[in-house]
Length: 439
Image (cartoon, rainbow, N blue to C red; front, side):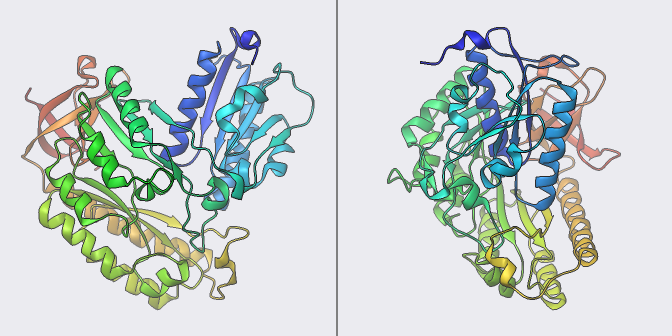
């Protein structure tokens, strides 16, 4: 039994790097601490506990994690510092040596962080608690509210794919999930708390069901029946796991939005093979075509990595032309970062940093063109928008069903409400359509 009296009236700050899954898990950690008597520190207040949830998807991510830890140690002198997440799992010894760090928790330990906090006394050097990747087995549930209106429901964790460039399977462990019944229960609770939108998160969510004998499609159908939730979004799903039956179901669903995020990573079949991806460009193009045939206004976001080992100039040009020809809405562009222990390091052709930057800029420009075209095509339409609160004096924003960002005059009473909006022209920054509220 954990003695929680030591946590009474203590304060904490939280810092999260990386994916939506990390943000969801940080929120759950915050809930655990709140229930033990810890409140979130106010702005400018020195916290008693600092929690850093890290990412390790790139070398830059590792660097940002170290910077964040140093900054929090400086801002909150004497605070008990807890570091968890992917960087903590992959490099626990290195993290534990960072000045000011007290406890490092791996993927299996983060859900039980209270038992590792002791009496919150600093002892001069950090202690690391991790489990070998092959032994990471448990699934820690998480359905937590973000800073705005939506909830993030963790449906799956870990990955069995072992792509040549990626360390996530080593940081997160093998694919695993909770039951559909438990997911439905959490969605019902979110609805009871006033939630209207839920984003399904995970590492490889299309792989849902491996540990329970269920399927992601079964999960989607079950969640669609939950009363009170008006919108679901599928955060990211592998193209080979995005089945036609899922696409068709979304097209006729009242609650699953016409919004897909599909990782492509490269538009070159040769590079996809080097990456050890489980599809080719023909399959990817067929998924985009299927979506657009039955949902012409669907938003499709696509992940792309540039400058991987083996991506010659010719392969990149082929990839660029393929992506340019896709009817997608937005590109999330990442520059390849070498990760220790990955199979990609055995590939000989290396792309220079300067060339990576040039390729990245070309794809970002292409993305801007596609997004702007998609937005402009919807001007003059009336669409339902879920509004999000913002600071006084600033425009209020929200998203349409198909994820167009909309800007309207600030009205706090509209927070977390769905209203019909007449979509106008792009704002000055080109980041949203100006809207007029009709009802």
